[in-house]
Image (cartoon, rainbow over the protein chains, first blue to last red):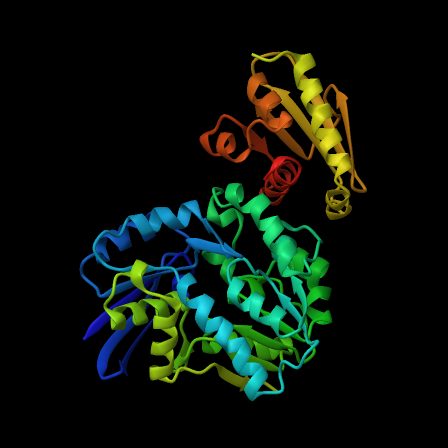
Length: 303
Length: 117
């Protein structure tokens, strides 16, 4: 049995463990949240190093992309460097392939994403592949990176402007403590009421809201049937989205026993299956494997 | 060590950089804040005030500040001239910013929008 563990800076209330069979291999996949405790995450990573087949880093990004430039998040890299023997991934490799494919899939197989769809991405530098795919398919885009991470009411409308701002800001901002830029630990269980009130109109003006679930959740106002495209959701999350008035939920990662895991977990699973050093894995490797696994986005109508 | 006059000049350069950036003014239209800039090694205080997206600078402390920026005079002058970014000195404790976390991120952001590459 292969063991894949996701160590997350997120809430331990979302911890989960499943056993699945993938391409004839048995997998035990688990998630262990550290409630925003960075040192606890470091300890846990060191403890697991060499004892499991692959590790995913959750609740934090290590690499952010804008165009061809990769930015390294200092706190995320510290966690990654704590692991010396076991392959460790943050999900960014898979996001660039799986999430891009999800957008193409929705255009081709559903009526959720016709040309001109108004899409709000709460944050795009953590899923640039998805952002590019939306742009490619002619969606009317709002990138909320400045709005939600920095509280600046400035919607970025094009991939080009996103790249330009990222080049200016990310080399330095990626050195800040991660909790200053992204909700970690208990913050993931609450909403930022002030920002919901101030910026909720961006959600209501959109037809599709996409991005990291914790960000999507934290600033979500009352909705009117919008589609949510995200990754990690639990049964409680689905109930939350229903209660808020979302019309449809699309998760980019497959469901295992009622739960869609984070991209970091899925990338760790793929790395364990590929048995190749991470730096030698190409997007093509992931795409081929995703096809063999027949992974498709999960579409759940909530109304 | 920088002098009070050098810090004033650096803040005026910062103000000029800010005011030339129309996009930055739009971005900060909602952010009315009073910032006290204080040197830790010489008697030097300045006030930065953002109102309706416009930035003004004056010598002396404000009656009430939303944010307080404290560093040695050299660091302050380097920072506002754009010779260094705020992130490193903030992270190593050379630069102290007292205020809400959101406001600290915003101030970092403004500085990078003016001087960042």
